[in-house]
Length: 608
Ligand code: F6R
Image (tube, rainbow, N blue to C red; front, top):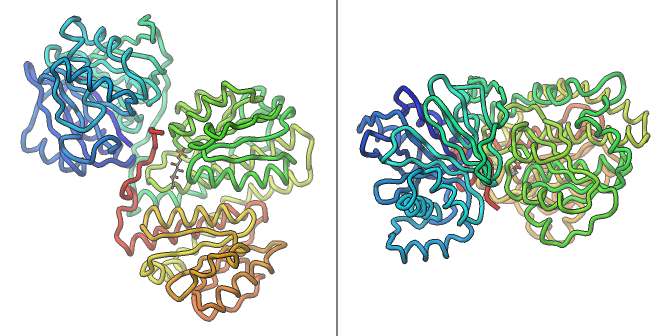
């Protein structure tokens, strides 16, 4: 999704800003732009496509400047084009960058048109530049204009604005869209993503909704929604360059798949002791609250929702609690009934997903026992808005397709199932068994990654097809869905998932030699039934690729049977995810797609 970076410095900032845009490329974008203050004029460069094209323009024009703003855009209002790219300007005076969506843009556009402003883009963001210009004509400072302007806005925004008549200050504002200040040496920075400026500072101030701030090279002032000057906490976070570079790998996605043994270890580390989970690992007082929980409601999107659907089985089997899972984008609109003592859980890698955040805000107004999040970004809005939290500690995930975030979410959800069971005095023996299995998990994940060579061999057969079907039963159905999601998002092959028992109720009609069927077949009480479902596919000429426990006997005429390492059944969903990630990656490699930034997608989806 869109990315903002701004810098006020005692040195030239052009390079800093473009490097920051590169760091945010993983979020997904379609165009980029920069505005640099140069004494009495502003250099304004925009390009459709990659940041490297903007960089080429900068090399040709060599603008020098100590103050500027820059942006990567992910189209919402108006197609990807140079005209729609940010920064937007008004009267060659005000230049702005904006993330978010202005919901009342039509009425504001009409108002501005009557005041004589004309629009050169199809975006909602351009009106921000004009409104600021409008208020600047009757007010002296950008700060005053910003307050008058945001009073008129409905929706979500992170904004950075500069004025041609002021070479020292950048004014920024935040509402429902992330924005932070970075304290550098002889320079102040602002960004929507700490990764953008993580090379320049390890000191960050996360703005809150309604905050407006003024930054210059040597000072900053932050004001709350009532315009009172306030202090916000400074957080020290080290964002190492290693975490945001590909190292020896071709893609971030590949790197992140292979980081999973360490990522999983980091999720478990410091949270288990002896043969149980430690107390209060979700925050002080969490163990006490957990003893009262009677029901769980989880909301999430995409991959994170698949994690929720696996975990619902664990909450039932280990914590003896019923669980409901919902798409975050749907939850609020189904008029949900809230039972007494229900724990509201969100799952989000980024912690900024607008649908999940909106559902959390809605839940906070309802009668839930408490709110809890499973998140990978401790500084994110969802983490800050939730009463309890656990961080997956997976490290930055840059590839748009979620990999290590998913497996670590599953581990964290297992810790939640165990903690709930412990607080409710349920299943101590089973808890001990799972803790032993969790300790072995990083090694089993490493073992599973060795399947890469077998997967490389089957990838060409799937890469040549237009469709694929994924099958799993029970706790493996959400894993089949995750496998299908991975394949479609990075290789653009249409893929669907079904619980294998459903095949004969319709989808069996799709089976022919052009429909590869990828099946998950662990050792379980319904393994035999699953094998019968696969026989139905075989009998109709379908090509099967089966990931299975070595104990399962299945003879294939075509396709491949790949044996999986042994693992405690409750943790097998984590292990069976890995070959599906590798398969999507290898298929996408053959189809030469943009693996880390697949078309039309964004890493952090900050619009509803
Ligand atoms: C798929 C993927 C998305 C995200 C979804 C939620 O690979 O990454 O489906 O899982 O957009 O994002 P978070 O977890 O950041 O809330």
